[in-house]
Length: 351
Image (cartoon, rainbow, N blue to C red):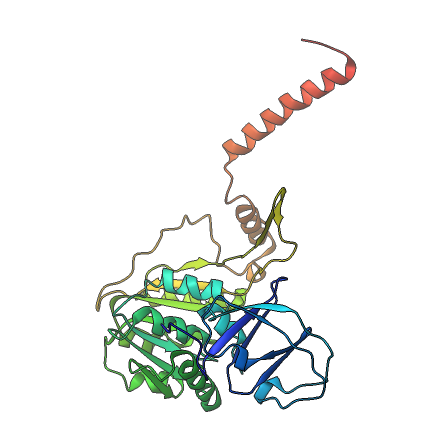
């Protein structure tokens, strides 16, 4: 963790009174354009986090660097920004990326549900732009190790650059392998990982190699975005009998406004982004326990292949699978009683 004054080359975050954030890399003589004038990097370099910088007016179009190329001169100034070092989630959302990054809410759940902690050996499939990798490297620390298998070389380069910019150098406890997952995992020793994290389109097709390289009792967490992906993965895990019954989690995030007596949820929220499917590896030769299902509660048969009478029976069973006949009779009695009270009240009768 970096401490002390800001130095050239590190990332900083500017936040104004409206909560708008800008994350940039400091460079000598550089300028960052905002909607309210220019921020001079030289005013920030050497200062401590938590200070306030004030924008200046642009009289003529000055020189800028990288992504901060000025679009037009603006005769504005005097707008204040608080200067801080960005948190990991701020860095992840602002970093250059080729693939869509996982949201911080999902990354935090992967770390928690996967029990990914100091010293863990983690295999990651699908590095993308490096957001998940950042969190994994931070969680396991130098005592652990992270191996990322990324199929596309350009994505591997993007994630490597983002990781190096965040840590200041490439972590020694990280290995990047540009391969298809099955080909890359086939070169790894058996039972050499405690955790596996999938962020790819078809994790259900990768379970054989995943089972080989994960230690007994190890945890697999897969991030998938659609219900069909989630369903196929769950059924593949159950069918293999080598993974425990999967748990599926979806997380929503909603922020709140809290100002005086005005305390309410914000009008916008981060809704569905993906599903997390969690399962644990069984020991060699041991079969996973499965939940026994009643024969009359068949949720797998395709109703379209049944006869008309069979289909009708199946649909009736499926529709009532969560409510017993006894429960239905009780509900009807309660409703009859309540309707009786209503009808008596309408007719002017009293008890």
